[in-house]
Length: 408
Image 1 (cartoon, rainbow, N blue to C red):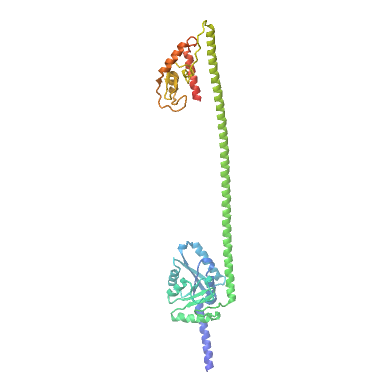
Image 2 (image 1 turned 180 degrees about the vertical axis):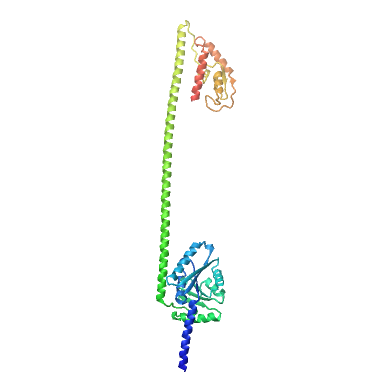
């Protein structure tokens, strides 16, 4: 009878395990993940291998402060979903926008009535053989603040670190059966566990590796596209630089041609000016020769020669006409000019000195009486051999002298 009782008890225990396992498998398992490079893949693998669930839901908290776009979140969640799709498991995704990941997970637990949750105890890179408790501040906060009705597993790098059991009796009952089911992986509460079903883990790992390879391929194609765009931009920039260089060379060429033309024009003007000065000098020389010829003729016709041959003082000559002044006038520059000559100079719009080419302080003229008396005295002494100038000739000489000064 005792044996019968043991046999009956054994049969009842087996049937209870099968029934409880079925309940666990029917229960939806929620897995909290992060965005960075499938960092939470070990939590997914652990949930697939050790919870026995057939339906899973990926939980994600989107933090707007990190400028993640909805497209980036969708791509990340789709990568996680493919891990389940390769094993013919159903997987859903839920996410919420919130600055705090812990508060976001708690709000999702409350909104969706989550009963089973798998969340990393710490990042896989922080795992060590001596790890016995939660290391992540987020995990510690969830363990403390999550509703009592939620059963939470905290694995790290494929090992169960801690289990926070639900308080309700029926959940404890299901947890007991789940623990019995998980005993094949040698998992004990609060202690380090060795993951079971190494073959299944390898398959999941291979699928994750394929997903990562596909993601790496997409990133490579994206980088190649960016590199191609950068090369195209560089080619366009080089093309624009060459066009700018050609424009600069053409402008430089036109400038040199213009400078050459200006130089030639300047040389031509200098040549014309030189020729004009030469002609003026020749004209003056001819006038002087004509005067000397007339003077010589007159002297030859005179019977009595003058007793002396007075020299002509240079200051008796007008700087403009180069002839003996009849009406000497002192200008603002201190020089004395023939009155008619300096007036013509000023009336033609000039405000500068004919001698220094500097601006005159005023245009008033002062008669130089002393010089006029000296000139008249000299003319009287020299009346025997000096010929009186022709008034028309004097005016013409004044005009030519003014033109010569303007040209200079």
